[in-house]
Amino acid sequence: MNLLHLKYAVEVEKTASITKAAENLYMGQPSLSRAIRELEDSLGIQIFKRTPKGIFPTPKGEEFLGYAKKILSQVDAVEKLYLGKKAQKQKFAISVPRASYISCAFTSFIKKLDRAECEDVFYRETNSMRTINNIINSDYNLGILRYRASYERYFNEFLASKGLETELIYEFESVLIMSRNSPLAKKKHITLDDLKPLTEIAHSDPYVPSLPMSTVQKEEIGDEVANRIFIFERGSQMDLLSSMPNTFMWTSPVPKRLLELHGLIEKRCSGAERKYKDVLIRHSEYMFTDIDKMFLDELEQAKKDIG
Image 1 (cartoon, one colour):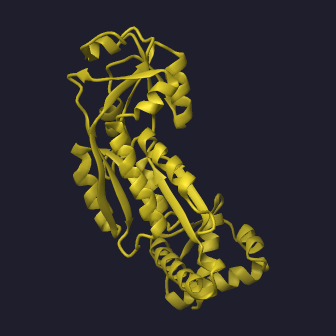
Image 2 (image 1 turned 60 degrees about the horizontal axis):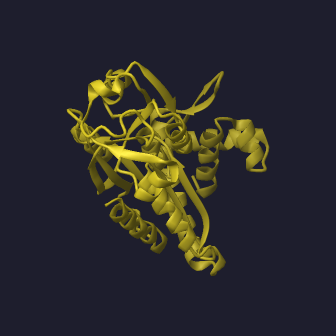
């Protein structure tokens, strides 16, 4: 087994195809197939399971690939350290929930970032499951999870089992945001009954480790309203809320600048207090870069701007 074998296996997992992986590696398919078989023989395990839909890792294969990616990442770090200034450019990659204060922090971060020091920037808004997978698969260095405080035990146990460290970023009670022209805009005390005639803007992909999706959806999405619009992209939610007065959305507190920009207001709802946590995750062996720290500083400032 050598580094090339590790690269071959990782590329096969990435493409789920021997043919495509061989093309990406600029080698013949028979040679790649032979190399994978030799690797499996030398380890005494089956790394990949071949199916009509493609090639996928076995449980033992997933374990091996996790180690392989860490080794390749460490080799890459060593090469960047000693192969000249150009190779020392850093990569910033983070997966986050669809949160306005985080988006504002990212915008400020990009404005201040010296691109001569950072070669690639990856910023992905997604749910907790994909954020965790992005970190485990070594595609992203950092992630921010959002979960209800009552689910903390499930997340802590799962993250610890994967060797991931956590750090609390923000703890809050969810609020309502809606158009300033909403029929509830001037109402001082809003209740769940007040929401029933309106349409909720919601995300349809909640996730909690060890809990069935149906259970999580029932608790997260609830049944207080009959009409919902499910979205996956944060920009769309702002447009919908500002242009449709009869809509609302549960979210974390939003910076005043964004509320004013989109003609929105923020409200509390009696009897519907939902406590959430935003938690930073990373591999236990991963060390923050200067660029990571710069983003985290902007995140702290964005929290202050919420007020």
